[in-house]
Amino acid sequence: MKKIVSCLIVAAFALATPALFAQDTLRPEVAKPAQAGLDLLKAGKFAEALAKVTEAEAVPNRTPYENFVLDQIRGSAAAGSGDSATAIRSYEAALAAQRMPPAEALPIMEGLAGAAYKLKDYERTVTWARRYYAEGGTNPQLRRLLATALYQRSDWAGSAAELGRIVADDEAANRRPGEDLLRLLGSSQAKQNEMAGYRLTLEKLLRWYPKPAYWRDRVGQLQRDPAFDPALLVDSYRLLFATGSFDSANEYVAGAELALRANLPTEAQKLVDAGYAAGKLGSGADAAAHDELRQRASRGAADDAKEFDKNLPPSPGASANVLVSQGLALATAGRTERGVALIEQGLAKGGGQQPDAARLRLGWVLATAGRAEPARAVFKDLQAKGGSIGELARLWLIQLDKPAS
Image (cartoon, rainbow, N blue to C red):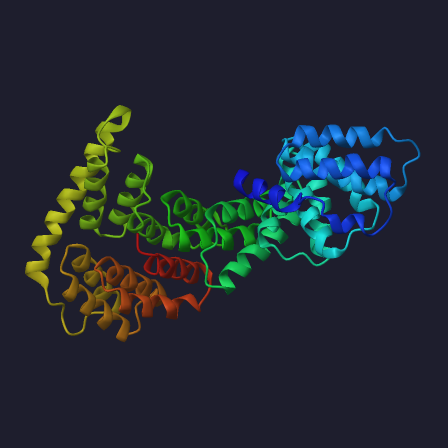
């Protein structure tokens, strides 16, 4: 931000040019110190230039044009010496004279906005940035300053509107929107309780900057939604785990307990083992409970392995529910190809009591097995269905399409 502001100030507070003197008449007693001040400006001697302006201002009964010229020289000298407050006052006075052509006025408005932002004068920043755009300015960098100034003065709706334009322009140009801008946009939306927009912004962050904190936020919102289907809670934890977003013992425990409830002890065992490896399980006041959970998962996984050898393949008349459940058990135990085949057989028979959930779980199995393209096809079909299934499918597609690290 400092770099942007400094560039704006340098660009805006351009030195007054001799052409300005030709537009009107300066009396000699004003023209002489004014010209000297202009020469000093060009030499980078800002304090001396200011002294020449003071000398010229001692001349009584100055004309509006004389004040206009002196305001510009003072503004440039003050900007060069780092006195932004004086520079702002001087150039505001020069613009108020309405003598400046648009080609010269626009960069000065741009600089006024930048200098005001540097002074944390957000009201003035907004005023000059909006006037700059209203009068034909096009520099996209200033829109970022405008959006941030609006945010700083608690105009959440205004900030979100400006940030939305920036993000839309970036996306239209196939540019990755800045993470800081997306975060600011999301905050502006959340502060005005515009949660639908916030979720979309969060998903943009997931697409471009897929950090665990963003995944936990987005999946947490989904889980807390009153319309969320509790039967899919296990699937939401699967997505969190697949994105590397588990961060607490509670998440490992909840995911494992839900997997056990779904009769998938091998999945539960993997989650518990991962929790121990991450240092999240096995210590503190809950160490004994974690150990008990690990034992339950291990026993169940061992029992499943024995059953796989005894009772597979399923009988020809096996129901869709049986085929899907056995397919998931096999897939989570590492027998992916056989598991996928059984799930697909179950889907061919109608998918059982929850066909869309069965398809979602097929997509999960394919995705975690590294079969991205068939998984993507499954999720794209489910995304169109909307509801909890559709949201989970859309989030899985974001995970599959994440940029390479």
